[in-house]
Every structure is written in C-alpha cells, then in structure tokens.
Length: 140
Image 1 (cartoon, rainbow, N blue to C red):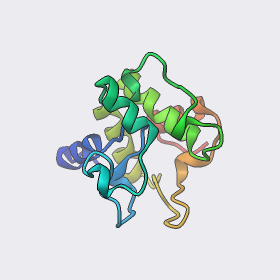
Image 2 (image 1 turned 30 degrees about the horizontal axis):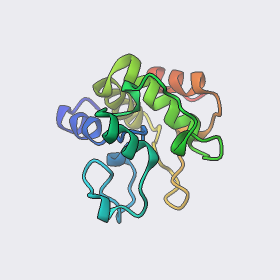
Image 3 (image 1 turned 120 degrees about the horizontal axis):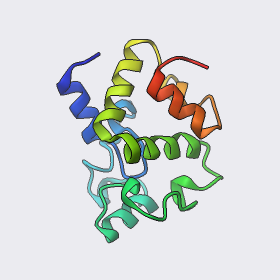
C-alpha cells in the first residue's frame, strides 16, 4: 500500500517507545501521542523520559536502548520495540511507516492476536531479523 495519507497516519502514531498506535487495534486506547496523562492506563517510562528530555522518541536519545520500561528484558515486546526505534533512528519515521504499510499489503501484520497484541514482528527475538523483516518484507 502506498497511500500517503495512511502512511502519514502510521508515522504520526509512532510512540516514543516504538509502538505503532495506528496499527494496534486496541479500541480503548488512542495511543500516547493522542492521549493525555489522565487518559492513559499507566504512565510509560519512555513517554515520560522523552517529554522530560524534549525528544520526540527514544530514537533521539544517546542512551537508547536504556533497558528500562518498555525496553526491559522482562517485556515480551522489547526486541520488536528496539528494532522499530532503531529503524526510525536509521531510516526515519516515514520509512518505518512505509515498510509497515507495504508489509501489511503483503500479509505481514503488526497484530494478529487482539488478546496479547502480538503479530508477525514478534516471531523473532533477534533485533537484526526483525529489522530485515521490516525492510525486506518477507517472513523468515
């Protein structure tokens, strides 16, 4: 899919931690870029830290990946998020959005499971493999 409006919506929804809120599908959440602190069910370490430092996202931080919050090894999605943030750092938010849209058109989904919110980018624990999947768009 090369719809610029759709790609722009994806790019604008990329959270500081690398979550892509436009593709999440969780109806009760508008995403941290659209929500106020009071609307969020929890205060995200990455959102708070980026706001304090004046960063748009962790991709601007010299301490990335910090190992805290969403990047903690205890988080099941930490490799995906680290790969997504690295992709924004190296290629830009518009490129990540374009990769995700193109891959979605080929059947690679951000979320397949609407209970655990996992998808095709969660199948590997290897950051380099997730980056390859994003950029090349084929399943391993």
